[in-house]
Length: 389
Image (cartoon, rainbow, N blue to C red; front, side, top):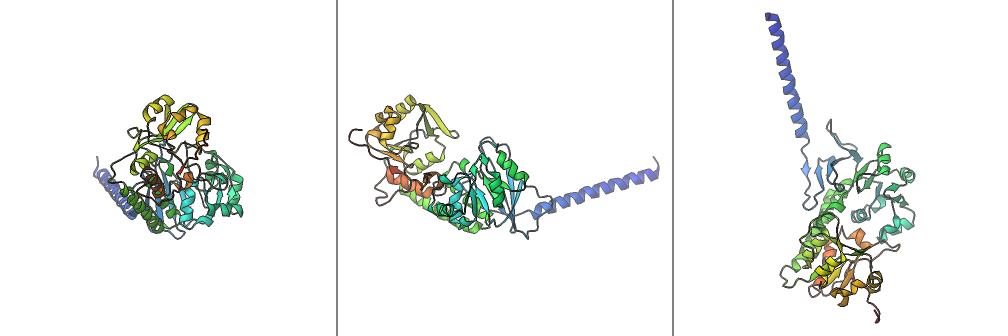
């Protein structure tokens, strides 16, 4: 090989090393420029927020059971200077001023943050219980959008929202796909996947980021957390733990919460002994009547018996219910009696955002001496039967 050829090879190799070195420095600099403030998320397991000042990044995990993809959302102010090659699934300009949400569990966050006026559409308006929101519905300020799986995209397009906050059961939603294609951002909220009561409530920080009100949302959650802990402390030294049954039958199968569910967490935190506390799973556990009767016939208290509100309804559904001690002792408590003007159940809407109120409800039922003057928000005694029942 000639000396000239050797020189050329040496020079090429040096240029290659210089290129790699510069590339490493560039990547390192870009990485360092993305160092933001991790917002504390202490109970929720399915989202993170990082604050970079003029922009924020939210990562949503497990948006539905078995989801294989995490979603990254960029929330940026108009004047934000964004790093190059920043990867994300959707970009939303903040603060949001026009929003569409698709679950009643999203409504309380908008109200608490003082952003209800930004809500322009919702699928299934009759399910909304909040009096404040119903007033805006009645005055025509919130449009009906049909159903979550088949949103009226024509009406939605006319509303021109900055963002649609959706939830996914299996990741298949053609309406969401159409909206993304025409440039309307759709972001997933997976509050319903959380297993701890405070984890669901902590999703107010997600909405706080959308409205550029993170500090306010964090203060709101802090107050709820403190109230929850204070209520839980009330039962820290109790000696008696009543035996608790939950759920009801549907087509000869009894559906009960798993022992690692948020409902079971409420029961335990309220000083109750849940029948199926040692079970684990997602969704509801399906059991034959004979199994539940063997396990819970002597349960002291029965909570959340589905949509039933009266003892008469229970008997009309199944004569077997009267075999339970809780039925005979009239110790059944339902959340289905507390409804909005158009029939929406308040518990489904507000309970995830206010676990402190749910916990106090249950403590007042399990241990009435601890909260003697308390008036339950959600759980009310099932309507008593007449003398012949």
